[in-house]
Length: 238
Image (cartoon, rainbow, N blue to C red; front, side, top):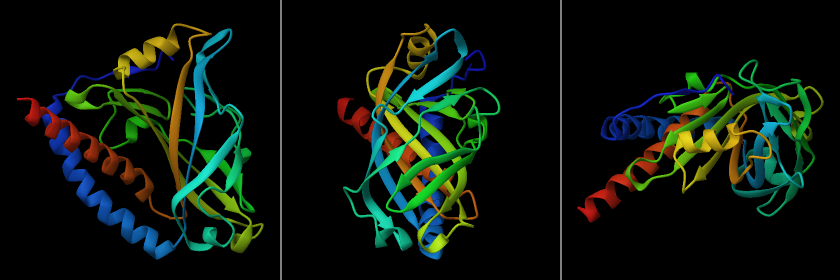
């Protein structure tokens, strides 16, 4: 976890930048999803803590390993997956590099006859906008004047099953979560205090069958929404 880097930025500047990215992201993501016609959304819960005896690794414990599909689901996924459909997900060990230990992670997510293999987890420093604090593929952003932190974890791989058969097609995915009562640095400090320093989090995830990195642009959409909410609350309080 020593690879974490803290970057301080002006909230107003970040909000303006994110807001601009959000508009472009919304258009790009919508068009990409329509063109490819395959998007899966699901949610679940996880615990985050250092690997006992190795504070340089982060363990993502998906608890009972169950995910639940939620709206919006599109394309071939709709044939066997409806909101409320459950599936399974494997725990992950995250490093500063190469991102996830033991890739490829076969059968990472299984739901409705589809299987997602995890083969890549790009460094969060490449996300736009850049996070306040990051460790490998894990990014933490400040939620602005409202307080709290917004977390994101991007990945990619192959999905097989259903119309995709055994050969499969590429997908890109992103996990997001919020820590309403901690700053990005406080989230890091709690985890980095060493096991059993654990943080529980509910997350949402979106997996898209798209060739371009439009899924990561959805991160900007989410951050833009958070920035706008923060600015509105701030204006009401002033």
